Image (tube, rainbow, N blue to C red; front, side):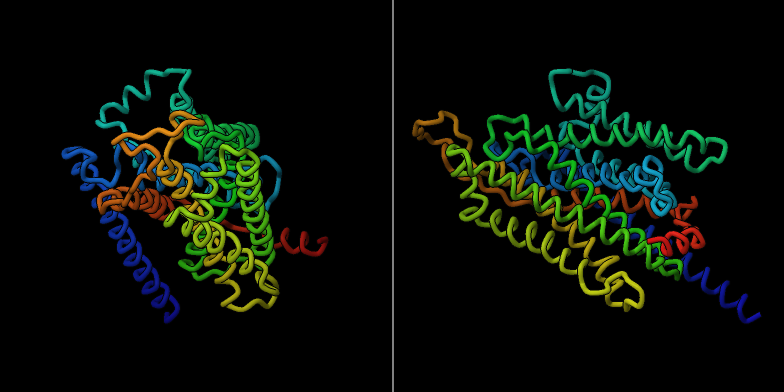
Length: 411
């Protein structure tokens, strides 16, 4: 009797916590809607954006959410396409997070159209010479394919189709991330953008950001349900995240070394690496140290994620290290998007030009409260959709511990 009463009280407590989370997410989304209609009515004059920096802080949040949405689907691909049972149990949660984060990211970008009704034009009329048009195709296709993929994963009658549909989803998400990175790689006028490395670098970084988001959400779900993630699963995911973080650092180094090889890029590299003020600080402290080196140290703490690891080690591995990777991703997007625009464009290479219109001057940019509200609102939309979906549907990963024991014995 005491046990039943305890369980009933416990369930009531969880219901209360659910409504609190729902209320928190709702407040964030409502504040974003307020910011949206305020900016839609008064215009971008209320933001910190100007004629030089036309993509502001909301775009930083939006691109991070879109890239991470593509990367988080990689968990499902490892399970369905490559047959790894540890990740297959997490495929439904992976697909749901991908849809939620893409929804949040695209919602932020609607303001960039000037008027919300222009979204209909963007979805129905395509200029195939524009990389933005190709991205619209990939975004719409992502919703359809991942939605179908989720259906094959959660409906037993359609389980036989999960692998082929999962393979299509895997290829599609690679195309989506390639197109997103190419938005910047194809802009030849910007010294910080024009590079063929942008597309593969965005793909590699999406792996790390997506897995990090997944690990944070998974940790919260296990904590919510008073469960402990299996040691072997923690170890596998820890090692995989470390590989992705290391690969992201490698591509960052290659990107900047490639720029340093060309004399025309020296000024931009000096701006980002040495003399860029907030952009230099964000690059070294946010992207490299907090988003790369510190997570690697936390992930390779002796016995972290292994048998007998303590609560502190589990927190470092399951929550803190992935959270730092996500924050490092935010810093990376800020440096790439804002820093790339702040650096002056060489309008006439090889010649000195002077006028009254900021030629050769580093553009100033300071995000307004409206931009913060709108950007965080995208995260709030993804958070709200995730909270509702996890509550309504069965997205909690369930591992086959007998199979895990057999695999552990053969490792």
